[in-house]
Image (cartoon, rainbow over all chains, first blue to last red; front, side):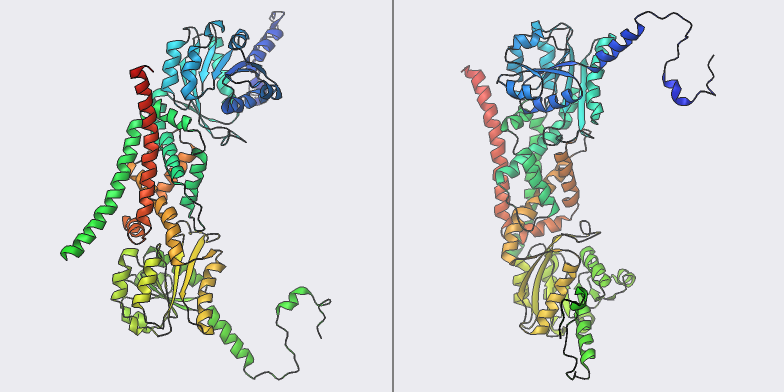
Length: 305
Length: 305
């Protein structure tokens, strides 16, 4: 009998079962193993540069088992992080990670994937990317990956600098491009996203196409302005306003990124050219406002109107 | 006898005089009146718009006596602030303020000054400006003001927004362009600057010429970028990075300023054209880096190199 009125509320969190019914003998073991499965994922990282290592650290801290492979030899770095590194991609695949996360640069993703022994991964694999453009890897994955792979496209909008101490409130954009209907596949995808959720990320579910539209007018423009001002070599002044300081800060945060990344944001986002043109048009407009006014004044002097 | 070891330290702030020497009978009164003179200045504000009102509030809070004049009728605002407003510039001048501070816009300063009854001010007047360009008012003042006026050029690098709550750590640039040698003139200039010092401003003594060099590459460029992005009408996105947020912040802080101010920063700072060209050149360079690379890739495809 249930006596809701008498039981303290917090007791209700447990699922009540009729205790006089017979339980399967291994009920507890089964539940535990499900819990265990939910908790620890084997995550395979392809591309163990700055960003791959940055993510791996958190995955490991959260108790997941991580393996990595990369063009370069990162076995020393991996050992220090307590994870296995495979120079050989075949060896990496034969470990059958539950989730594979591609952490290569935008420019090298396609060639890496085309030469990767995908057939050695188990058929039931969740494949992810973390590129700053999204439509491109989505299409690439759909084209190159076996049909039975799940696909989850991610863009953690932070990196080793901005997410150094905490990921709290930092946006993670995700698009469940293709996740199979069965419970396990759904659960695995959820468990993986929960890592970011648990770190405090602001979870933003958005189509890859919409991401690229928004990113062209925000991230790409931000990088363009940063590179412009970086190219100008703005010197620090003793009379900097707050606005100027924030621009110098922007230069530090973008101009130090590789040109490869910037070029990737441009080349692999089809909305970028239009945004660049809009910026150019705006610059021309501001300039013409200044010069028209100047011209007007000189004309007035010449013609003494 | 001085017994430094015994006296508590704070007692030493008082100047010790030999108490057995005869004091002039009005010693105390004289000291008090000096103190009084140092403390309260009569400050005349020309141009009682946003910025003039913003400064006046602090001057009044610090116990100074302020009078104001302006093209428009601000008598109601002035009354609320407890100061006298003169619609008539002659009446304003006949009040003989110790200090006159010009708070007009860059564009209207020259015409205001040329029609102002400067001859009605007392010969011993300290004349100041607070424009965002400095060489222009300096030359204008030297050309138009009577030789016996002192000239102090100021640029408070903050305004009603950034300096709303506190002026702490906000830069005040000043150039003592012409301050007479006698003690009173020096003291008056110092007392006036002390208002800003007491409010916590970072005091930056700098020639008007150097100010304009630095401001063109910082403040003018900041405003140009702000207006560019403002013209572009950057929309807020759900996936804004910190860098993008700081750009949107910049737009809020610059694009809302009048075009007049921006045009003033350009027109009345002879270093601005060169800085605008540098920015344009940098933009062209960034763009060509992108397009050269794109072209290279297409060429490779065409010629199959």
